[in-house]
Length: 143
Image (tube, rainbow, N blue to C red; front, side, top):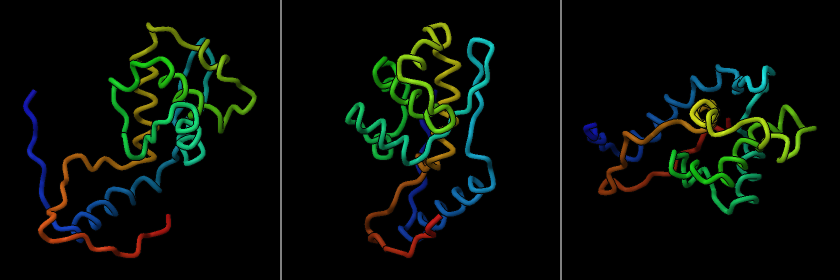
């Protein structure tokens, strides 16, 4: 697979592109449905979940991202899955969520978690800030 070159833009353009990518996310329902053991569950990644994963694992998903390598650690995968489930299924424990899936479900669970995280964070991996233009701090939309 060939790597795609990143588009290099000024800090102001980066902010504009990020806003353009974030805006449609607010028009979506930020939840994802997953079916395991013939039951539907609702996943949602919000700031509470991000903080829960950080407390459990010491990994800040906002700065570290979400990768298949990271999710190959059963502690990390279990924590991310639990916290994505916790908002809408507060009665479930970490043990309950761990028992919902096995390795054969790994790709399916990972895909659903990736979608869930993508709704929380926009993908900016193809854009790079031209540091020669300097960073500009603009008032962020508080959404």
